Length: 425
Ligand code: PMP
Image (tube, rainbow, N blue to C red):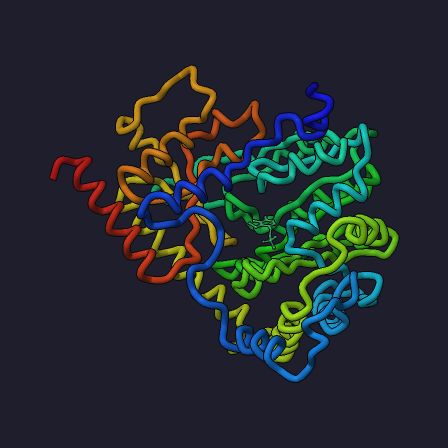
């Protein structure tokens, strides 16, 4: 019977943290610092471009466009990123537009991972990588970012989490097909340094391995840190697929437009997956994003660039949430990038007794309690670890700080009140 109702490749991947916690956030009146989306509007020039696309005179913007990307969008993406990657990009062969970065990732795994192939994933990782590898018939091989102690008197930084070079090297075998790199990293907020990227790049070249580089948070980098594109390192263009997201780039996660950049020899296989699954992405959103990228192209690096403004604003929001968490008694790990941070809530463990034999990690149960009793939503960090490692990191929860001042203030108030109750004041 089970042969009829489930395919083997789906075994064990039916659970999804987002479905569960998004539902909880909607059920209880709570301040939502859970799922990663801004609760502030996209910039006016982006909204206006969309309204012009749907309300302007070009009726063809309501119809199908080119399957692999609307011409105006692939053209500007090729120009924009060609400059950043130091690579001449052909809009027709080196760019593929997808339904968000999610579809871009799915295309990478489906197109290039075969039965028996291994894919190296760096923990903690954006949770969909593992099931996507499985659906492609591959095997995930994990390597961990390991925290070293913070400098005395200082909060831990995401930069204190590092790869052990020998451990990383040991994960490459003759079955390794690809490594997934996510910098800036969700959920930790780590921005990989040039040296760390070079280490990964050297191993990719040495073992003839591909790199799926998930760079959706490329513009959200703080404290003067630099986002390095691994495809721009020697020997890497030919073996890297770079993934981006308009949702993260222009604060429009609901538009679900993403892209991949890479050599034609790899992208042609992604196009095969795309044309046999999604086939085509919404035209009006692509037209609007083409206009938005054109504006950014013209103001790139200048103070009026949205990317520059967004990272300044988010750095302030990060600092606000860090202060609120410290005042409330949690230990945040200060992120160098993304709009997430992980915080250690060990001080609060007495509030929610552990159930040692439970299959559900402690952080997950803690957050459910926190949503219902304190009205604050976060995401369990165990969700970003493979099954054998989940319980080692269940003292951490992830908060999203891409939120309006009012939301951050409400979170601050909850944490302050909680801390007062805890200390009996
Ligand atoms: N990669 C990472 C690391 C992400 O955090 C997300 C979104 N949370 C995605 C990919 C998917 O992006 P999109 O919304 O464009 O599909």
